[in-house]
Image 1 (spheres, helix red, strand yellow):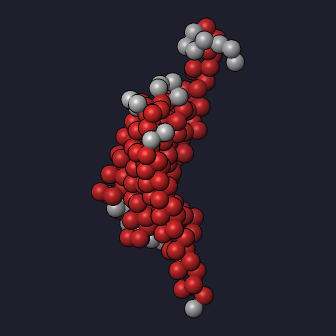
Image 2: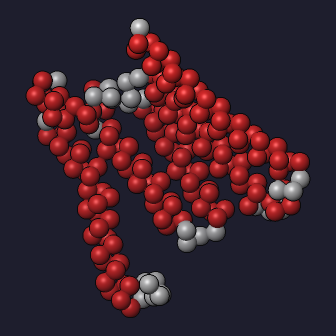
Length: 185
């Protein structure tokens, strides 16, 4: 598509289509999910409602039966940074991503909607490591970043990022193995 954005056919046809598609395919599922659960909220403990809707709310504390919709909106926010952030310099895109990640971590940890304490901690750890990864990699793209790549400080940052991520993966693998072993007993 060799077209200038927000002019001519793009503005007259593609922008309105994008708005409709964004509403139905991005905002539609979380809104539909929340509406369906809200409609049956008084009967969520009934067997037939758990059978039909349980996959949407059973992981969360009862008062957060709608939390799956929040997770969908959080995912949409991350995708929006990727899609719309491409129009700005990489530093700003990284800062937008960092802002969204911090907001998601803050909302999730303050609400504590997920029943499992371990899952809440793993989710927070994962978001924190991702935020630290983005933050530390900003050293490479700001100021004299291209010089840092060739210096010991740059190598130290790379090793730290690698160790943080590998450490988190090791924790996840260890917990999976522990769960598998305890299930076999």
